[in-house]
Amino acid sequence: MIRLDKTLYVSVFDTDWEGHESATYKVLATPYGPLYRGWRRMVDAMVDDAERVI
Image (cartoon, rainbow, N blue to C red; front, side):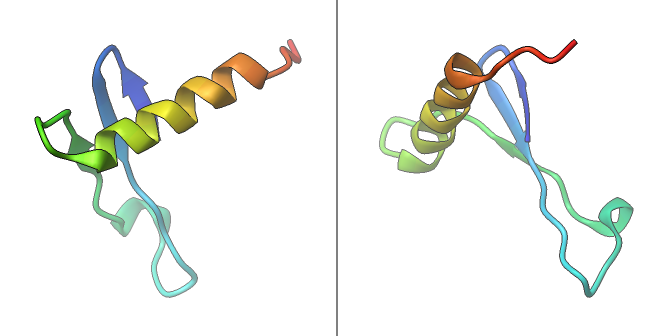
């Protein structure tokens, strides 16, 4: 998952295919779409709770 400002790019891969063969999806906010809001909330929580290593 990559977040650039208000745009999310999401991709996953499995044991059946390599990561470079996986599709990448651009997820934008829509008036009635919970997918963007859910991922955005998860990323914000992850960043807030992260502990800097370097």
